[in-house]
Length: 296
Image (cartoon, rainbow, N blue to C red; front, side, top):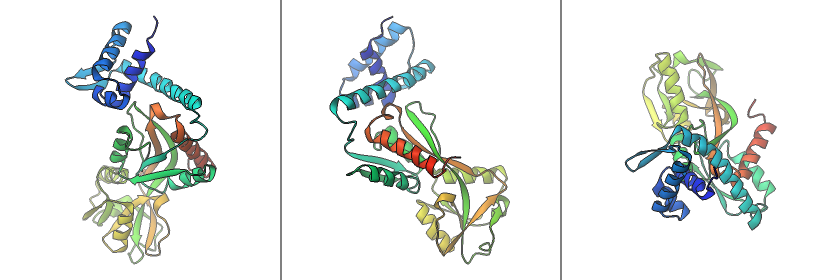
C-alpha cells in the first residue's frame, strides 16, 4: 500500500490540535479538507484513527500508536525545514515557558543565555494543570512541572528528583528539630498551594492515606505566598526541598513516615520536540541535570 503523506500529515495536525477545528485554525487548511483527508486515510488503511462523538474527537488505540510515529515524522520535517531556511543555526524569537516554579527553570535559561547571544524568554508561573493547558493550547513552548502527562500529544523528560519538606517559622516550637513525622501534622494549621498544584495533591494524598487531619488549611497561590504566610505565623507550610531556600525567618524540616518524593519534568508538544529553541532548551536541561546531579 502506498501511503499518502498529505493524508498522514492531516491526521497528525488533527491529533496534535485535539480537534478538526483547532487543526484547521493552526494549519490554514479548511476543516472540510482535513476531514476528507483523514477519512481517506482511514478508508485506505481500514483503521479507525479517531473516535468521534458529536463534534468531539479522541484518538483510538490505533490512532495513538500512529500519532507517536507521525510526531517523529513531523519533527523530522521541521528539522529539514530549519536546515533549508537557515533557522537551525540561529533559532529566532523568544522561548515561552509555563512552569510550576522558577527554581528549576532559571539555571537552564542561564546556561542558554551564556551559549547564545540575544536569547530571549518569558516565564509564566502556574499550577500543574494550567502548565499542561498552556503547552497544549500553544500559549507556551515549554512546560516545567512536577508530573508527566499521559497525553500522546506531549513528550515529557524527567530532569530532577525532589522531595516535599515542611517549612516552619523560626519561632515555632518545632524550629529546633530536623524532622517531623507526617502523623504529627494532625491538628496543625497548614499553608499550601491552591488546588491543581502537585504540592497540594501529594501532601493531601499522603495525609489522607494515614488518616491525618490538619487544623485550618490556608490556600495560597504561589510558593512565595506560602513562605510569607508561614513566616507570619499562619501555620506550617509544604514546599519542595529545592525551593526551601535560605530565610532567617524559616526552618525546613524533613517529613518522615511517608513517601514524599516528587520528580520534575519538562513537557512539550511531541511534534515540536526537535525544533529550534525547544530543542535547545531540552539539550541544556539534560546537560544541566547531569552536571548538577539533579537526577540520580
